[in-house]
Image (cartoon, rainbow, N blue to C red; front, side, top):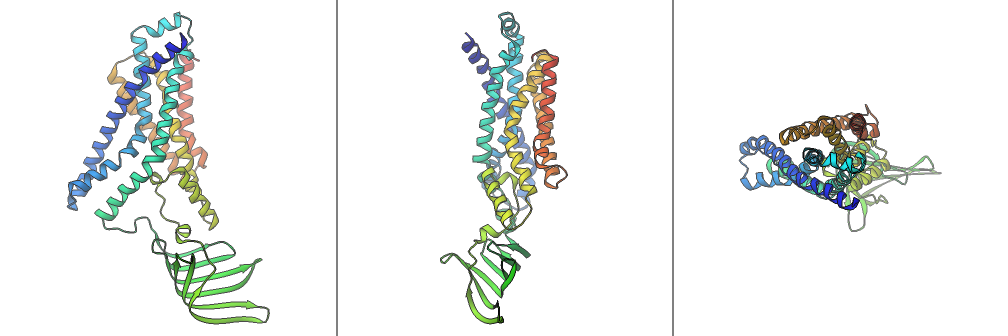
Length: 361
């Protein structure tokens, strides 16, 4: 009997969830289309480019509105139970409020799994392709990710420290470059060159017009070479610290990026904040389900328009709070964990307080 009741309550969730997801996705994509239409029109972009740009944003917007759909589905399902008298009948039949809410919470965990899959598998490639269309095809900016950098200095491991006037991570070249070689904390050699290029066949950096200095016990030895095959084997894509696009990277990509940044001695506060934020985002679904249950039990059923408006308002409020937290974490006003989970904990506390007031827990 309990399994039948569980399945019945759970079945009330997914219809409103799909409806809410479709409505919210249509609303936010329509707003984006109107917002970007003028930009594409001014640049005389074709309809195909414009429609591709909007369509490629759909996974990103879907990930954003899934918690809102979860909240609305909870309100609809629980409101339906209350309006039909099934909630009171369940209580009279010996079910505790927590038992009757358990199917909705289980469904919210399913929505969280869907959220995580969309966020990690669909959003990064689609979002980056959309940015390429916008910056490269529409704006003509081929270096919008800042793969070309000036006056850079970083470690490449094995006691080698590089300085370059210009570093082109995409093209695999450096200009006005020097390399300091250390062993046991002592400078043992220097390479100064007009340019250096990455040789993908030999997996080494080749210095052109190089002056190679070796510090020997007998004194420094300097030699001039047209080309010098160095021992530096770190590929350019592992050297470059390109512009972080939070929506265009998965958690696995962020982990690899942080490892690369630590290797070259760069800070990782921004990446840590984004990483924890991505981990926290799917957890917004069970939090919103608890909040929706508290609202429904405290206020009763007020109709579909009320539920729709409440879902939109609460969803955007949580979205704004999480975006504010991420921004604060990226500039190190807040710690990464506080920035990512602080807004969720605040909404969770509000939901639990409401459920306690409704005597559901």
